[in-house]
Image 1 (cartoon, one colour):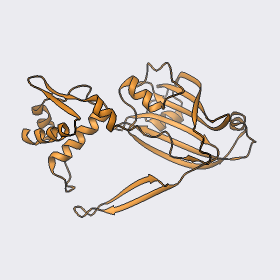
Image 2 (cartoon, rainbow, N blue to C red):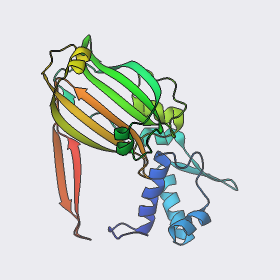
Image 3 (cartoon, rainbow, N blue to C red):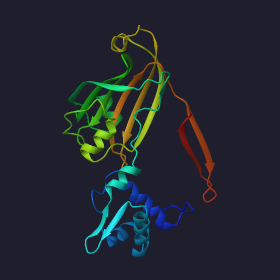
Image 4 (cartoon, rainbow, N blue to C red):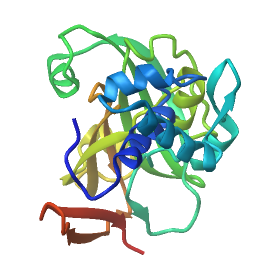
Length: 251
């Protein structure tokens, strides 16, 4: 089940369980040690080591005769939602979202293909403007998987979208693939952004999913006066000779 990466087996299992906790695969309580041992095809003692390691950082706690429970207070200290965008704006003024609409729709052919859904699947379509003070600096149309977020009826301007999804539904996207393109502003976007048609914009297409690769979101965002700068750190494992890359926003 596991490929060797130099880590002890119990630490690899700990990492998997921690990811499940973070993504709310487990709600309040972990499965029993015997069930986990059977799932991971390891001895119960290995599972106990993994859970002991999680308990040592306060992520879980045991109750005699009842099981192992998740410490939500500790989880909120460790958990960080995906950023909604990696771009930086030239101005230091905070960026705030303004909700234009939130509608239940059926997936078009293009969106269905992007999200791996059937044509006509239920989606929630969220349209927003991004503001720096009185200036419009971006526009986004976000499609949310209706089978997952089917009861979404309100989005607050004041909180990040992923934070609201996590708090309302118990989980938000944990993985994202983005495509960045320079584009020329058309008439519709020029009207929304209050700029002249033909200006240069940054187009960002994001497909975001959970750990099981179920696509939860597809969004198209256009940004004005924004820049993207990334720093890539690459290193090769001495165990399996594979290259690993870490990408961070450059400062």
